Every structure is written in C-alpha cells, then in structure tokens.
Image 1 (cartoon, rainbow, N blue to C red):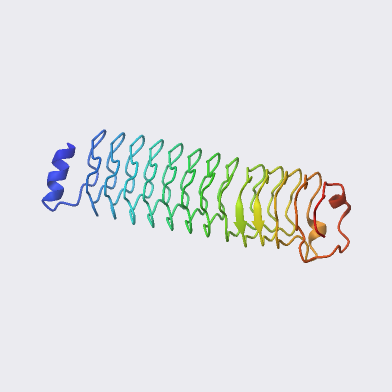
Image 2: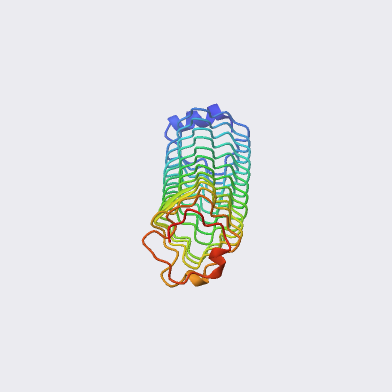
Length: 281
C-alpha cells in the first residue's frame, strides 16, 4: 500500500491496517495514533518523528527501519523484528516489546522507562544513554550490548544475559543482582546505590572510578577485579560472610571506606595479599 493512500484511509477513520505491505514507505512525521499495524511489512520504512502512540506493531517487520525520535508510548511491539533498526531518541515509555528482535539496533538515548522488554533480543544493540528506569528486562538478551551511561534504576534484570555488556558510567540504583553473573563486565565510572550484589560474580571486572554506595557485596566473587580509585561508602562486605568473599589479586589502590563502620574481625589472609592502601577497616 502506498503511504499516501494509508494516510487518507486513516483520516477517513480507518484504524485496522493489519498485515499491510509498507516496505520502504515514507511515513516520516505522520500521525497514526492507536492504529493496528500488527504483522505489517515496514522493512526499511521511514517513520522518523512519527506519532504512533498506542499503536499495535506486534509481529511487524521493522528491520532496517528509521524510527528516530518516533513517539510510541504505550505501544505494542511484541515479537516484532527491529533488527538493525534506528530508534535513536525514540519515546517508548510503557511500551510492550516482549520478545522483540532488536539485535544490532541503534537505541541511543531512547526512552524505555517502565517498558516491558522481557525475552527481547538486544544482542549487540547500542543503548548508550538510554532511559531504562523500572524497565522489565527479565530474560532479555543483552550480550555485547552497549549500556554505557544508561539509566537502569529499578530495572528488572533477573535472568538477563549479560555477557560482555558495557555498563561504563551507567546508573544502577536499587537493583537486585543477587547471584547474577557479571564477570568480565565493564563497570568503570558506574554509579550505584542500595543495590544487592550478594553472591554475584564480579570476577575480572573493571570497577575503575565506580561509586558503589551502600552496596551489599557479601559473598561476592571479586577475583582479579580492578577497582582502582573506586569508592564503596557504607557498603557491606562483612557481617560474618567476608570469609566467603574472594578478594584475591584485586587492585584496591585508592579505595576508601570499603568497610566503613566495621572493625577488623579476622579478615581472611587473601585480603592482605591485595593492595589495600587507604582502606578503613
């Protein structure tokens, strides 16, 4: 269907465009609020700055589509194919993207606050500076994704795949990451407070310059982690569980107040094999 024809139908009151073929169509800046485009072929379509609030795009084909700065809050994009799509600056607040294919897509500075992304494939996606506050990322695939400077406060990351994800400079306040495998992840310059990293795997991580305030890291695995110039004010690394925490070969140079409020209660020998200059114990 031609884009002009679709817009004329819309102006006449039609809202059901399920399964329509709009491959390569130019709908930039168009207003299509609350329409049904489920199963539509929008491969390579241009939808930049379009108003699609409440639109149903479930099972639609949007790979390689241009969705820059699109307004799609409260939208339904479940199981849609957005592989390699450009969603830079898109507004997707409270949208449902469960099972959506977003691998390799450009999601820089996208607003996904309170969006449902469970089971979504975000492998290799660029989410730099994105807003994912209170988003549901349950069992989402974030392998090799770029989440630098992203805001993830209150997000659900239970069961998420996080292999080689980049969280440099990200905001991770209020997350429950107990037992999560975060090994090898770049967490340098990360800001976090009141998170639970208990029993989490932080082996070989970069924590350079991280600010981890009031974090519970009891029993966490920190083998070969690099925490140069990191700060852990009011964080918990004891409470009787420090003996289970692996601190071997960590570079603690410049870390301060790691055990603030605690006294040396028989710390394991592995602590003293690390560089602990400046730590208050």
